[in-house]
Image (tube, rainbow, N blue to C red; front, top):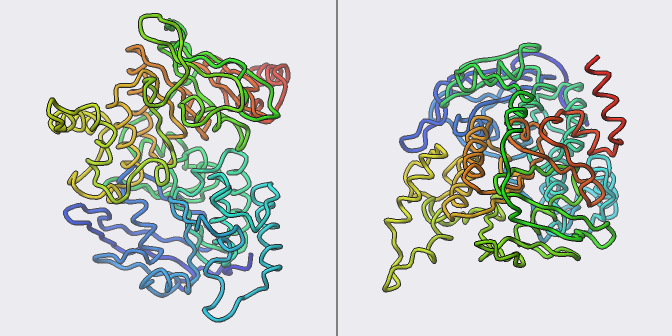
Amino acid sequence: MEVCNSMSDTQNQVQISRVVKRFGETIALDDVSLTISPGEVHAIVGENGSGKSTLAKTMSGVLRPDSGLVTTFGESPRDPMHARALGVATIFQEILVAETLSVADNIFAGADSLWKRARSRAEANQKSRSILKQFSGLDIDPNTPVQQLPLSVKQWIVIARALLSNPRLLIFDESSAALDLDATTRLHAEIGKAREVGCCVVIVTHRIAELVRIADRATVLRDGRVVDELVGKNITKSNLLRSMSGKNVAIDAKVAAESMLGRELGSVVLSARALRVDRDAPPFDFDLHAGEIVGVAGLDGQGQTDFIRAAAGLISSHSGSISVAKPQGLGFAPIDAKTSGVAYVSGDRAHEGIFPNLSIFENFALPLYRSTFGEYGWIKRRQIQRAFDGEVKRLSIKTGRTSNLITSLSGGNQQKVLIGRAFAAGPKIIVLDDPARGVDFATKRELYTQLKEFVHEGGAVIYLSSEIEDFFDFADRVLVFRQRIPFRTIPAIRFSEHAFLAAMFGESEEAEMSFERVGAA
């Protein structure tokens, strides 16, 4: 990358000075000031609705402040095109790709002028193939339509597009959320290269473990205001959580895991036999018990997503069977997503969750309409309203007017609406596919609390996450997928970062145990 030099004058800085931004009665940013210097990785942290994404959009020229000043390298961006001309590249929370166009067309979108291509088709294909292999580790045909690719590869395409523009200011707005641990490590290497040549890097993220490793400075927002700024070694998990919530937060994962051991599980509620998620993968069995939370993890493309979707009845497995228990011990029946009491929550809310042209309330209520028909075919709106009010209170959803479009909400609050919708359907089993992507730590803890109450009342949960830390103090066991099968099952009492990483990368259990004994010594 050829990016900015390391001069520290205002012509090479990004300065936010007393910025205020309102949306109706909501104050998204309230007198926010900060400076981002060349060669600095600056994290913007806060709970959902704290103003992080709004701040990123003011730096990107997407939003203009109501008052105050955003100065990017000596100028105030008037709109996204002007910001791009100033050297700003933003990777937004929603993965913005043209699904029907090719990989190469997506990577080089916006790089050509109206009348002339900047490079030949052959050169664009070669460059696209090379950069995606460098970033993702995959050899992908650049003529492949993007709609055929998994979410993580789409994310790399967007990242590649931004890096190829040689930015002076590079903004990541929750843009590692679709990446697994290995991919995130590669992304950090690219961020390190940008930092070395003097680029200003801004990371908006909820992945606290990630920013602790890479950030030079962290600005903490709460209710649209700057409440703290941490530098260097002071950027720790405990300091960040305390600043975000205003409380002291301490988590002892081992004590929490040991406290879960006494909980008795119920009967099997979902069973998989001789299941193959891929033609070339070996078969495996799986049982889910009432009162149990089973985590699912793995590096990208190892079969865990197909397993989750098959368990929710969304797709058919290659072979084998998945069945759910009938009422009153009447055996098992093949899974059917509509009638089996299984609810599914996707982390890809833009494509599989929300209806962007409908209101907040309608997005919540749509799956409930059929079950609330009255005697004469009228929908019992009061019943749905009570359910909605209950989930808003339970999940602390910040909605504003419920008649507003759901896209008026922050990404995290949109996800809360989808999770509340799943709870309101009264399921026996909830299957969650990375549901906390783009959701702040406090919201995650509240979701975990609600899911624990759900299993305490006899429900069961399968929970896929791309973040290892999600499982601590939450799951009873975790299936780590590798080569399209559950490579290892890790019980709560043995949860550790090394245990998960060892399984993901195929280390033997003996090697993992040996490492833990050495560490303990």
